[in-house]
Length: 252
Image (cartoon, rainbow, N blue to C red):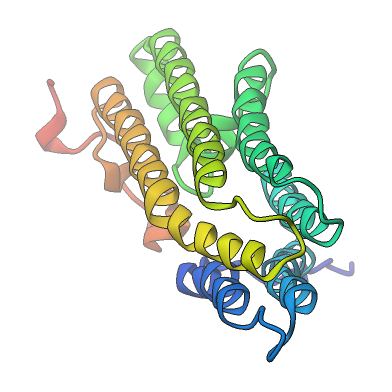
């Protein structure tokens, strides 16, 4: 019998490469090369936008990460380029910057009414946690209902991080990008906004995400008796963990 092999490469997170390609390089191009002596405003915008757009498409095609958040990211970059090339009012940039995280936040809320809440897909999933092991422990302790209630609360908190990003994106775009689209000044402001958005929006959002994961882990620990190491997905620690809770957590 012929055995089918999976030829899709394993995706390994590369945060520094993502930061360089999606934030630093486009920002430098937009801020430093938009003058007529260099690329000019149009070509600087096209090349600057091409980096995150091309990287996002590469990730999607290479690793087949066809999730809606990645697709929205590619669409977002494409819309930014379209606003600049079509020389639309900068107001549309602020609306676009706010709309993308707003749509994701609403999708998270809507997903809580379906069989596949997004918080399960992104935080409580087999690639991060040993979900089967956790579910068995919850069933043994009759804690499934309480855990589902906590998971729902985590979903609300998760959607809140995107609403925060939406509001901050709009404020930042209105504050920084004020020049007409298609000009050198617009490109420079767009590059500045891209750089500033990372410490002002991405880092606080990341901190909130970590806090939500910590909340979820504390819930799992209290309801199952397992430590974080004991419930991490087996492929992350490369060894099988014992089925029962650790001795230090028994009787808690």
